[in-house]
Length: 369
Picture 1 (cartoon, rainbow, N blue to C red):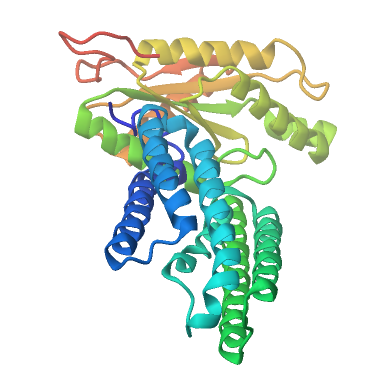
Picture 2 (cartoon, rainbow, N blue to C red):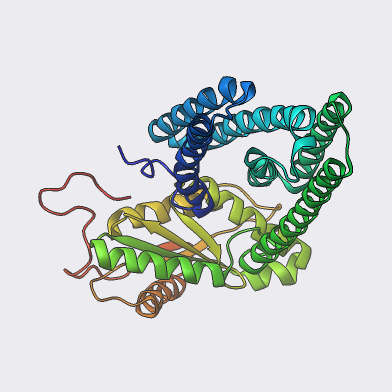
């Protein structure tokens, strides 16, 4: 079974999270088993590790198997792994402070994994939630460590210095993670603003251009069909002049919303120009694309929008072998202007030559659109 098969292709972060987790879980299991094995060989296996290391390793392995079978449950797997690691690390903090810290100058290797809980939290949660969770986790660790130090036979300056360095370094990790999470949030906001039309909240021209290039590359590589629809609101300048620009803006928003309701999840709708909308329909031939355009036309004109009767002129074109984005856009634009010239309020498709990609090839099943 391919664990990537059911992941959303439009969410690269989720796919990356899955790939990283499929590596981290076995790494966690190996780390736990290595700690157990080396401690046994050295004759220093403590009661805590004797009880917790094997169950934790088996837990990571079980989560790995579960994730291979259920890749869509990636967040649940992360939460379970976070719980396993947090319980172990908090237990180690108390045990280390109570029984070992006063004997040595540094912390045990197990506590090197303590900051991993912060990293996991910032992957799973939003910035504020992750920061609050991580602070709570660190505070609980400090309470357990403090209780352990108070119950240890000796409290010496070396142990206190080690504890202080551990606390300060973890606070530094937390603050840096918060800064990076803030930068990531700011970048996401800037990215959304750069790729979203502020009036309709649709994809804007720049983002759709990139989507078209990716779809064209896919069509060329796998010989798959796709179609473009270019819709223009009829007499939009007259709407603005008669009812005012606020009404015109509302018409644009409502046209976008009404068309979006009649598109498939795989289709993409963008505001292409002032009153133009571009629809990308993957796996769709020219004929089914015409049917889709007709449904969009009927959906918009069936009832007034913002109190104004509205109609569309829609051009339709389909990918041809050897096409470029510019050539395809030119044909769909020409088809839309032909719809305008023929009286508006209609769908016009480009001529259908023999080299338009069919929705399925001989010996293949399925149909486009």
